[in-house]
Length: 248
Image 1 (cartoon, helix red, strand yellow):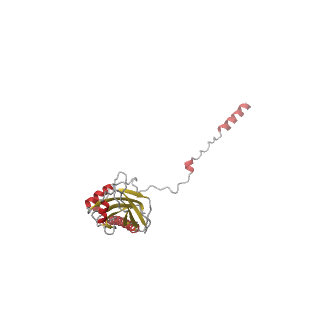
Image 2 (cartoon, rainbow, N blue to C red):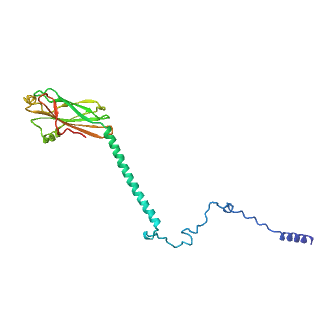
Image 3 (tube, rainbow, N blue to C red):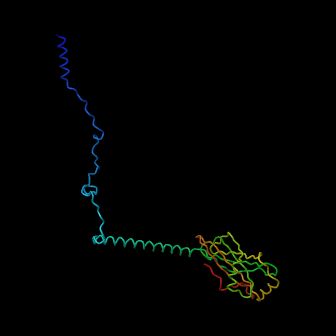
């Protein structure tokens, strides 16, 4: 009986215990402090309830305020004027560069032409003296030339003569203010016929030298100088004619 009562006491004590439930751990999100930079919903935003389903159509020009019209027209005028200034500035810059090149480039001028003694049956040879009258060196000198023996040369004959030029190229650099001698050598052409040398010396026939000199200036631009000269029977010097004596 005693043991039964003791057993009942223990049972009652067990029934009277309060069962403790473990406390729930807070989640990671709940422990974070509120974001100070978080923005509250904008009540004027297009996606707010006030603007849901609405479409904001742009104003027509007629409905635009006068102040906005003035601002728009002023902006257009400023843009046009700015473009105009840019174009003018570009043109002035190009003109300035071109003027600088013209003033400081090389210029090749032809001086004297001195022929070798003319002998029947021998090729015609001569020396052409040129001068760089510019302010900077001339490069890549090319010399094209031909000789014509006639009574009086015509423009058509000069134009036809250019088609049979002989060419001599040189890598010589001619500095500003310096002279240089170019060679005319027509060894590959037909030699003087018999009696022709005497006719040239006495003026019955005239010997013409026609040529073209091309060169490059320090700015990389190509230029040319033409010459057309005939032997004077009085002193055997060469006189330059009015036609085909030019350059750029």
